[in-house]
Length: 117
Image 1 (cartoon, rainbow, N blue to C red):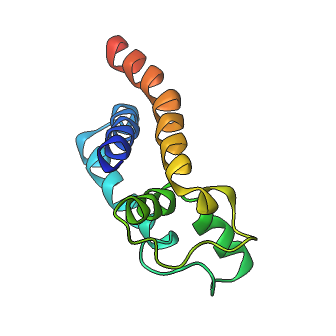
Image 2 (image 1 turned 90 degrees about the vertical axis):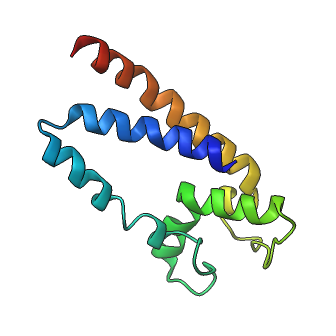
């Protein structure tokens, strides 16, 4: 699960790096993604978050991957409530779908950009 998601995000990074105009700009892209894990359920449960932030956290791909890994390792912890978003309620399927979606969206333009550059 983690390797698939890492592979998918590597393609996102590859595409964004190919879009940047300089090495310095490409190097700064990593720090721009620092906030994404903070807006997920990787560090804390989403139950106590305000409504809009809970929605963002539950639909964050990192939340699905973190919850799926916990579930696959036998440590599901607190289960998602009945009002949880679909990826939070079905983390394994959500993590797989997020990974596949990222691959479908970013592999073709990254390969085209690399081939033309």
